[in-house]
Image (cartoon, rainbow, N blue to C red; front, side, top):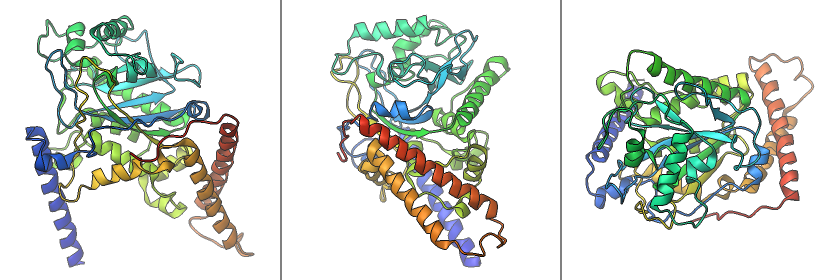
Length: 446
């Protein structure tokens, strides 16, 4: 027992030292060459585009998509974001509440089956300059990710100005006041903020950033919990006495988005109130959270005994009849838009990891190279096979005493195998639907 304690303590101290050293390096902005290069999420400078096909939208009514965006570098203003990048969240099925005095959400009145639907979903972005709120909501997939640019269309100053005017017209920043930023005329200078950093950070993300996204289907009830958390978060600052004060250590964009997903029992939350150096154990960086969610949703399907040992997983299973290893859990990579007159297209996105083991980097490359996690048909076929194996093994264990044998897992066991059977039936139905409309296959590797 003593040896176990000593080993655990050593592991914690090592993790603490690596985290502290790594985070200090990132915030210090040292040279990208040498040691700094070993903190990159992926070593390549060219990001291969991987997108879910159009059939995805017809099969999955609700999903959450957590994205890590690379560092931006503006040719217009000379502004540059931090090397750890930015995190955003897209919610299919949530819509911006247009008549609210500050950014709020509600569930969309209909289920969208196309990215072109104006009520498809909403993008959520937390910004270090926000004061009266924590986040803003950008309506629509194309405005949030693409800035309404068509593939191959050159990004010019005219498009840059036009998308800002659209965002202002849609009252995206209604009720938002800002902390001081370079060139600010006042704490309500929306146009100045959009020129300085809002464009390419809160919306039109691909104007300025490459994105790594983990998309996870959720239930309607789970989406409602995410919406409720985010609404409460903004209400806390807009109606309360305290301003939102962004902190790289304690309360950044990744903290809000991780905790929004935790409200739906997708994973555990991170504290933003830990004192002094204890906050080091609650760090949240965009690339790390992308990899964390990617690992969670691409892992093995847990047994019912494993479910009972994990608090968030157990609660999600019982309340929503849902597990994070869901069919349709896919990874996407979206490179910065080209041709591009306004932003550097060089990729820089760093993660907190050991520069010697580079575990996060290796894990990201491995998952993005696996067809099961980037291609819809391959993903569904994988889950169909896994469900078949689980059900077959379950049938083989049945015996004449099963109906009377007592076990504390009896109820959850029955729920679990009912869930597995239902999921298998849904996957088979999905495969039947996409077989009637062949889709273009995505590249399996870079």
